[in-house]
Amino acid sequence: MTSTILRTLILALTLGAASVAAKEGPVAVITEAMEELAEGLDGRKEALTVDREALHALINDILLPRFDRTYAAQLVMGRHWRSADEEQRDRFIEAFYQNLLRKYADGVLEFDQDRIDIKPYRGDPSEKRTRVQTVVTLEDGTLVPVSYSLINRESGWQLFDVTIEGISYIRNFRSELNSEIGSKGLEAVITRLESEAEPESEQ
Figure 1 (cartoon, rainbow, N blue to C red):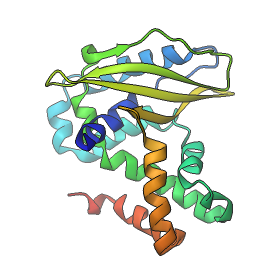
Figure 2 (cartoon, one colour; figure 1 turned 120 degrees about the horizontal axis):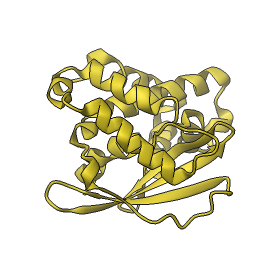
Figure 3 (cartoon, rainbow, N blue to C red; figure 1 turned 90 degrees about the vertical axis):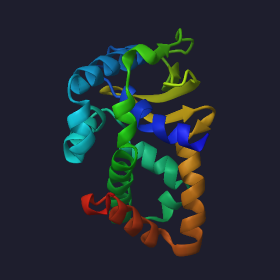
Figure 4 (cartoon, one colour; figure 1 turned 180 degrees about the horizontal axis):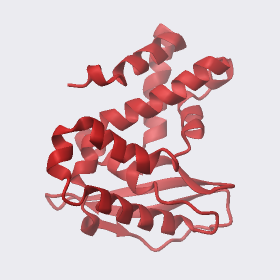
C-alpha cells in the first residue's frame, strides 16, 4: 500500500499544479495541469528516465509557481513552525520542496492522462479552501482515489496537500518529522532534508 502511495504522490502533486488564474475554478486547475504535463512528457519519457535533471526541471516548471510551498511546509512543521526562526523556516521550505520533487519524480513518468478520472465537483469555489476528487487507474487496474486540497490565494487556486487512499501527505509527513524533531532537534532534521535534496545524494 505504501509503495502505491509513493508512486502516485508526485503525479498527484503535479496534476494539481495547473496554470492558475484568479477566475479559474479548482477543477480547471486540475484539468489544465493534465494537459500541460502530457505535453511536457510527449515523446520524452525514455530520455527523462535517464536525464534526472531534465525530469526535475520539467516538474519544477509546472509545480513551483502553483504549489503553496510556504503553507504546506508550515502545516508539515506544525507546532515547530512557531519556535523556528526565519532562517530555519526558509531553509525548511526549500529543503522540503526539493526533497519532495527529487524523491518522487519517478511517479511523473507513469503519467497517463487517460487513466485520470476527475469526479464531479461538489465543493464551494467561494470558500477559502476546497478539495477536488479524482480516481487514478494504475497499470494493474487498481483504482486509487486521490483528493487534492487547494487554497484560494489572490493569484488563484494553489495546491497544498494531496490525500491518496485516505492518507494525507501533510499529516503523514508531519507525523514522521515530529518524532524525528523530538529526538534530534529541528536543525538536525533541516540539515538531513537539505542533504537528501542534493543531486549527488540521488542513487
